Length: 319
Image 1 (tube, rainbow, N blue to C red):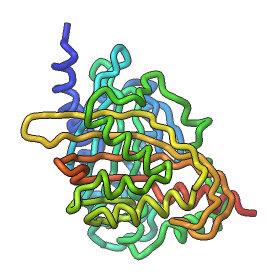
Image 2: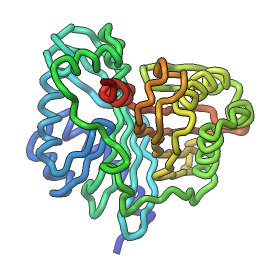
Image 3: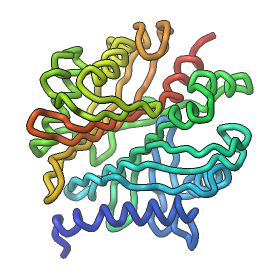
Image 4: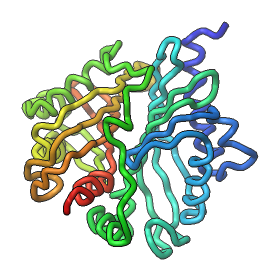
């Protein structure tokens, strides 16, 4: 019988191998079947998909538009889920040339780089469930577009498919929102305070020289830049309810203490903030945050959600 500690050591390599075989090598030799369970549940801000066929279609569409795409895994943070498998939270950077026409328009020939983050539940060596968030806003800005403008153009061609919401994103059987370690507890506390409008947490919990990465390809340094991101987000959805879906922390040799957290906001777009004039639309935001800690708090933070899914909900509910 394999020990949990051994499985935790193996899963990061499995997740990296799946990413390379499926996306970098375009799913050759049945990689989707090899790494995904038959009824794999795949969730993203755009919606819910079940089984390997949608994954294979996505691989082909991406390969057509970005044929030289390379995915670099920055980190994988794992946690045992007991009898429900192992949760692996993966942070990646993609590099590619926009040399094919597709969902982002006619081929532009531009070189792009963007971040994506994914939580994957691994059971008996295969991925049974995953949640993927891509910085679509970062891709669009590098192509000279905006998330709002891109969604407006799509809506002119017809209604959008319904994005993920609390009904289509029910609690998974392995959901573990309670951190079991110090790093996970620190990150959960920071996000909870920020979403509770306790913005003193920024000065108290962030290192003075922290490095930050946010949606839209935005980077920053220091607590003031953290405040410039979190405050407008909360102001746009002042009454939205925060749900913590999963928290994991690690303290590994030659690595700083670090943590991963998957969270969501569900509420009305009733305030001025990151998304313009209040629309009163009900909006569901799926987010993932990674953080590394030092003696004075968060030294590095990566938070990601898909801006286009938020604009799709705001604009799609307007008459």
